[in-house]
Each structure stands twice: as structure tokens, then as C-alpha cells.
Length: 240
Length: 376
Image (cartoon, rainbow over all chains, first blue to last red; front, side):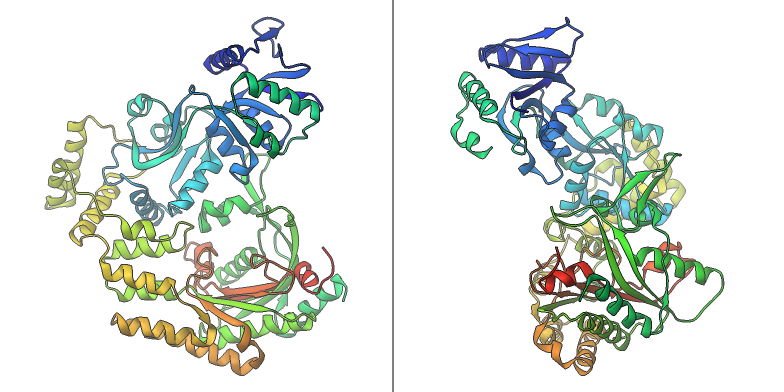
């Protein structure tokens, strides 16, 4: 990968806002094959491999070094990085796509408001049911790290494929770790956020991959992008 | 010595102790480590899904499947002490780059003997002799005793809920700090009738009424009596006024114990005396007696053997004496040998159907070679 390999989300508001941000920096993106295509071109950066991918694929690509740079959610970067923040480098927080990753439990659990209440409930649950309390989430690593740091061990993770907030109602899990912006969906599903259950305040970020193979050409394209987007480049480019 | 010679040297030592050589199942249902030890261990487990979608793991050590063998043996009605040994592969995801995903453990597990200082010292000596047979001289030995923290907490006379919370938190990465600093939240007014109800039925009625008033649906797999029990536990913690200063001080003093193994019992005893906790004496005596026996068996380890009160608190199923032997050329996180007591594991694996005291130890041949300055 000699050319700069750059990715933005392939659909929805994240895509529109990413395109707006790049266009305002002087690098308009045009899609090849119309609105439904997954290939694109970007002007003003020289020969660049421009890709439209899901936010999760972009985060994974940045972490494993198969992409040089891209726009994705902070939540996904933190969750997919095996080691942690050294696996990626957030260059700029973009001010859109904001949401919180939180721990929520049924509102009916009037005895559980904090993470340590949850730990106590989990231990009692294990005694009564001979299995651990289940926590449904798409954020397996983030959840494990947060729960460990808060000394909560009495739980089992259930990987959720979607509609995580419905898990307590359907009975597949009691606790969820999910993303929320207003909390309305949680409320509608009979759930409440624990008072110390904020794992991460996430937003869309422009991030680069320190582990990718960086050619002089890729660095040069990145330098042009930094200049257009008014990012102070020196320190960051030295890192890669 | 070659790799094979190191494996043979350690294995011969364990076989000579009368243990039966075994090679148990490579693959276990993921429930075994995860229900037993919690999600914290998942980060290191080689997990895969079988054709029906069941989550399975490659054995992360030999202790788990060997303890499984012993639980089966006991459940089939055979009693009496039993010892197993092995030289077999275990599988873990790397904690750091360069850690192998597949590695050999040469070890032994002994079940059903007296859980006492003599047995602790003998198991320790067996590992130490195996290390010596491999031709390597340890640079340090770290020891601890996971029964010490619970003994101090029990001696403090806290409400059961608080004591249990502290004991569990001690074994987690975050430790007990957040817990001892937290102040319990008050009980909301509409829930007071639930707590003051005369019978469990009335409490349940009051609780359901409070939920209905708030417009809250009853979802999740915790039952109403379980939630009410949680509410009562919280009220009890509130009545006790949170964690008293004395408890904070004792936990702080305990956390600071990091000394030669020979000094450990005296340091623990000084804390027990200062805070008037005589009920800790049997746990402390055991630390003292065990170290005396180890020094009689192996006079040469005195100079390199240390004791730390928090040592091994995150080693999931261990619950008593434990140790790690460190070699040259290797970080502290990569011991050449280790071992410890896990009296609760057989019961945990069999849902209480079987019960056996247990202690074991392993040598890591790959690291032994590194400590001797050879191999990668």
C-alpha cells in the first residue's frame, strides 16, 4: 500500500457529515457508480485510494493497519483495539456522531444504581440461579475493560447482533452495554443508566493507523489533508 | 540441556512423587472457565464456536481439566487422596507481543490431602526440586496467601453484604478502593413500605404497587424476592453507615505488606495486634508455619523468597498459598514455575457435588530455557 488508503463511512448521517468535512477542507468526495456504489474518488490529495466502508470496518482497518486513515466512531476504535489507545491515533474529533456508551439495567431494579450495586446483585444472582448474570453488548472489549476496572466480575457477556436494548425484555440478558444519545430508547424499553455507568463519551473522529505501512507518498497526501483541515501535522506525522 | 531434556527432568520429578500421568481433554465448554472465573479471563482464552454454535475453549491450563477428572472420579464414588501429573500443551491468547499462544506445562495436581502448612510446603518443594532438576537457579520467588485478606475482613465483624463485596472486589482488577470510598445511597420514600412489610407476600405486594405507581415494567430474569433482598442489603449497608475508617486503615496496612517471606507472619501479626483482630491468628499462624517448613526443606530459598499480601489476587480460582518462581532474562510476568492451593475448585466445577482440597504446581520448559540463556 504505497498510496494513502483513506476511508469514510458508506452510508447515513456519518457519511454525509464526513463528506461535508472533507469538502470544507477542500477535498470533495465523489462516488463512482452513483449513490449505491462503494467506490469513490477524492480530489486534491493526489493519487489516493478512497474507500467507503462501514464504521466498524474502518475502525478494524485502522487498528490492524490495513487502512492509513479514516473517519469512524471513537467507540468502535476503543472496542476493537486489542492493546488500547496505542493501536490508533485520533487526529481530530469531528463534532458529529456524538453518543455515550453506557451500562443500563432494568428500571425495576430499584436496588441497583451503581456499578458496585450491580456487582452485589450479580453475586446474589449467581447464588440463586447457578449461573452468572448476562450482559448483552456489541462492545465486548470495552465492556470487559470497564467492568474489570470497576471490580465487577459477576457477569457473562452475550454478544449482541442488534437491538441490544430489547435483550432484558426478551430475557436473553439482564444488563446491556450500548450506545445512546438521548436515552429515550432505553427508557422506552424499561431501562435506566447506572449513575457511574458512563463508559465512553464517543463522537466521530478522524484517526490514523500508526501500525500501517506508511510510504513517503502516503505521508505526503496526509500532509496535504492536514494542511487543508487545519490540523497541526508535525508531531503526528513523526509518529508514523 | 535440550528442551526435551528439560521436559523430561521436570516430568520425572513429578512422576516420582507418585502422581499418575494424564493428558485430559484439550477442548472444554467455555462455560467451565467463564462461569467459574468470570469474563476477566476471556481476554486470554482461545475461544471458538462448534457446529451447533456452542462456545468452546482450548484448555487455558491443565489444572482445570485435571480438576474436572478428579470431580468425575469423586462423583463416581471413588474416594481418598489422588495425585495427577502431566507434560502437556495449554493455549492462551498472548498478553503481550511475543507470548506464545501454545505452550507446554509440566506439572502436578494433588487432591484430597490435608489442607495444611505441611502439604503447602511439600508442594512448593516439589516444584522447586523440579526447577533444580532442570538445571536452573531461580533469581526470586514471590509468594502470597489469598486466605489472608478474607481472614482480616471476617475478623472486622462487618455486615455480611459488605464483607462479601470487599472479598469479591479484592479479586478484581479495580480492587477495593472504590468500595471503601463509596457512601451508600438513601432508600427512596416509596420503597420504605416494601422494607417495612411484615411478611414476604406483603413486601412483594408493596413492591409491585411502587413499580406500578412509577410506571415501571417488571423485566429481566431477577425475581421480585431477589430485588427485595437486594434492597434490604442496601438498607443494611446504609444503617451500618458505609465502610468504617478502621476498615479502610486495616485494608491500607494489609496492602502495604511486601517483605521477605520470613518477615511476613510478624508483619501481619503486628496489624492484627494494632487493630485488635485476634480472629486472624489461625490464618497468620499458617503463613508462619508454612515458611518454617519450607526453610527446613529448602534452606537455600530463604534469601530469595518474598511475600506480598495482594500477590495473586487476580489468579482466578486460587484461594490459599500461592507462589511464582522467577528466572534470569525474564520479566516478572513470565515466571518459570508457579503453583498454589485451590481448595474450592473441585466443588465449583461440580456444582458442589464433589469436594476436595487441592494444590498443584507447574514448570514452563520454554521459559526455563530462556532463564538458562538459550532458546526464544
